[in-house]
Length: 470
Image (tube, rainbow, N blue to C red; front, side, top):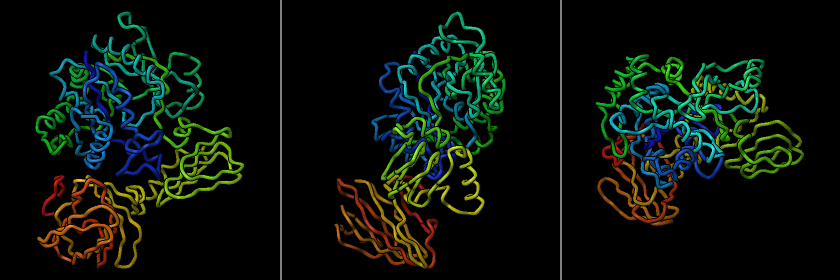
């Protein structure tokens, strides 16, 4: 039976701040390899004969990044489904199941932000699970524990299924335990970490969801039936989806159904839920250090150092987490990795923006990056991808100077269009209708100097936009 991957790409990854942020969360970052977590999740399935094009479920703010990252690795999805509001995993999975209910397929539900280092073991586990799933079971994957971990929920295995080798009935799901209870689970031998990965028939899942959460099925069905295409995306009907209860698949179905089965497996799995977890899945040097970027160390042990933009030096320290980005630096003891989310809470409460976006902000046409800002002025770097263009727009409160650094720029100001090349510049007065386009085959880089009484991104009146933005 064919398998359709359903990739859940809606998380925020607050414990990986300052790298992971609201508009660029961990699943869209290259944390472990040169590929992003989303790309790695899909690439590990790409050679399987039975795998169909995936359905990716994500938030509206991430849609262009998701589409671009799939394009970069030559993956054509069945659909990129946009959640108008976050409603946890059960409604997201339900939307995919409703779209697939008339097809004779299995759904392989995978978070977009997990690491699996033993792909062969992962594939073998999916093949074992597919036997039970074809027989009408809702199969989850239990990760064989290597330590008494208190950060994961657990699944207790019951009797072995006689009709599916390597599969077991689920005796119960248990919440994250304390250290003593986690050790008991490890000693018992029939408890596994809850991976959040599932395999089942869409119709079976929907039937169980209808039994235990009928209001969710009703709301999501309406959202799918009234969905509409927007460029490369499928937009779920906003009001209908918002009516759905917010719940995880575990609480909504898996902990209640009598059809739950588990496949225990050891596949080098890690949910990368903190900086210490990321350190565990990266190469460490002889002193136990995980290093990335321009870094100098002397007498440093058991430390993660990640330098994204600047040179970082550490001398005579141990057991630290040091993460540098363009606008923030994190220094924490490794035992406090879970407390990083408190920094994000502080930034939100203080009305700051460092939890939302990086200095480099990605757009469907490319990106822009803040260089300097002061009283009544702001300087940015802008990159426009070949063949792309910004919206036709106007600003009420700011003028702009553009200097082409490299590439070719087709610039329209008040209906007059002119081609600019490197070292040339132009001026856009306040209130002028203007547009920037890259007609060339190479990226366009330019410097933008804004001046005026208000420089916020909301001072944009769009008249025409290739990407359907308001």
